[in-house]
Length: 61
Image (tube, rainbow, N blue to C red):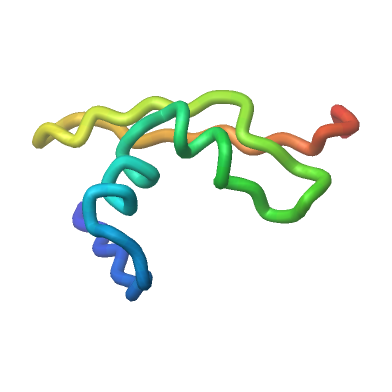
């Protein structure tokens, strides 16, 4: 399986890479809406690695 994600962002490349590849950063920005949050994130960008983020409603529903 191959997944390609592409977007344009007006920001420093290093900051964008950190935000996308650092689990702590992903937990700060990855949310569908304000009443959701990312409770866990793992990133292993090596070939065969995993990229996972878990989003949940803040009210536990």
